[in-house]
Image (cartoon, rainbow, N blue to C red; front, side, top):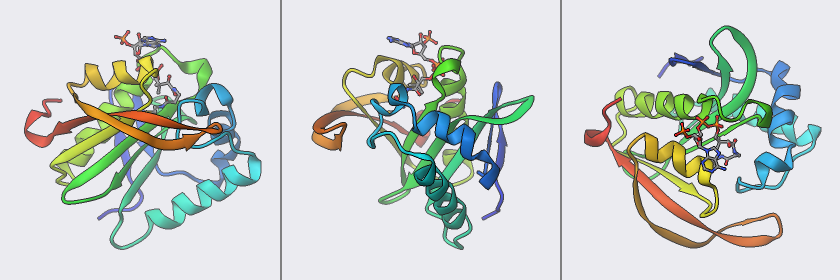
Length: 180
Ligand SMILES: CC(C)(COP(=O)(O)OP(=O)(O)OC[C@H]1O[C@@H](n2cnc3c(N)ncnc32)[C@H](O)[C@@H]1OP(=O)(O)O)[C@@H](O)C(=O)NCCC(=O)NCCS
């Protein structure tokens, strides 16, 4: 497996994080508008530093099980989001993503998720990719639906976030269904 990874999509590039990304990462994971939809509460600067350090460390494992990449525009190396695939189960992976709030609605998440899932199917040989999404997260549900994911069902009290248990709706796509 190669390190570092850099994958070029149609609108975005997915690349490894560096310690210099901390301010851009904090603008994402420190913003309640974003984290209200995620499985963790907003994080402070020290937690953003720790997140990046952990990501960089895990990215270098010989048997890499996490692909946690920064999302940038194609012509600007600043991080505007993240896309993540965590390997779990048999040739299976869990997809997650977020985009900084002032860049929402421009197609970046759809392209980042498409690019990440294509890499997971073609390069990592995954058979099944899942995304667990809050039932009220219409934007994220729109992203996976555009990419042809199928709704499987509800995971009850799946995450504890923002002080309460929250269900997730589970979506999946299988390698032979992936046409991107
Ligand atoms: C979900 C998220 C990543 C989408 O990012 P984005 O770059 O704005 O997404 P895109 O522009 O690629 O597409 C969003 C789609 O959702 C639609 N959408 C956006 N807001 C919506 C809303 N409130 N209700 C319904 N649809 C909505 C858009 O119209 C678009 O669909 P379209 O291309 O058919 O018009 C972003 O909102 C975000 O970071 N949210 C917080 C974190 C998060 O929810 N992550 C996913 C966890 S499962």
